[in-house]
Image 1 (cartoon, rainbow, N blue to C red):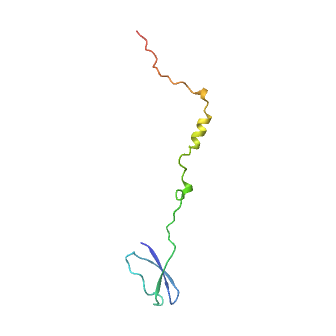
Image 2: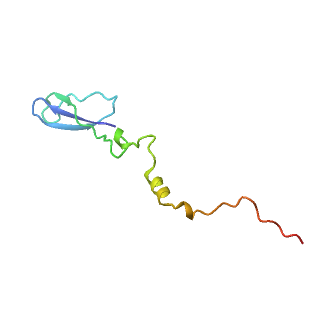
Image 3: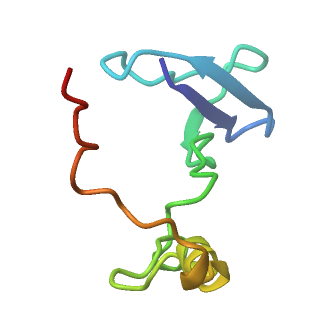
Length: 92
């Protein structure tokens, strides 16, 4: 349920009220019985963390930097050849 703020036009007191959206707004001040005005207050909803801005996403098509460094460090002469044929069976 949202919290609404009201200010009394007569005494200036500010009051918060936890109300359903379907509830009717408060009309009279509890302190002086003056008329209340509903205030527009800041929302308590905040978007925090990464992913909310275009700069937070990785550019599409750009290579992964960790895969580039791994392939650049490998020496092609150190690669072991792949064995394609199985070793021959010894006949008895």
